[in-house]
Length: 239
Image (cartoon, rainbow, N blue to C red; front, side, top):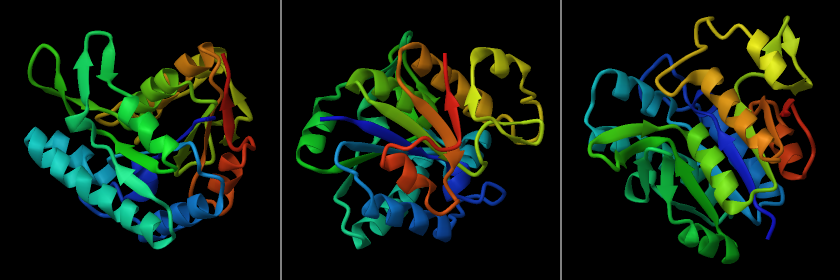
């Protein structure tokens, strides 16, 4: 079964200027477009946004951060369920261990859900470290890991920007050379999970392994549907 990974950014689904504040219109648009598009073989990941970043920054406990992010997950699950999408949560805190070489996860349960025609929904989370303690696992890192483990045919990052922006507009393609030229020092360029810089590093890693990836504006009507139909949208990341 061809597998597609779609990551809905925390900046798309939430208002990051206010803790634990969703963007209902964005959640509704994303769920509607997923329901109307081919979504068999889809793995959905969402960022934590204002349900995770402020909580981590102020030192909330791992359990507290996880409980907060779960609330956002269930807002998305409810929106998908209202449109007939059989989406089920798979919480990284209970299924992922962070080792020296990155996250480790048994993907057999995900494959089983996909074969049953369901859409697994994962998210950025606090996860146990193999050497003890907890650490932040970003949705971007999770997307890269799962894409390689599952043999995904394509990966999309739906954000609140039109793609990778340079010189006032989005790039059609971004290679490692363009990445080195980008200015990622502007406000919002970084956050507790690495912001846009971290996202692009993960996608460049996928490009080197032959996995096509795109960054696009998920708030623009039609873009998520276009991506799920197999079209290129926003900026394609190339090796």
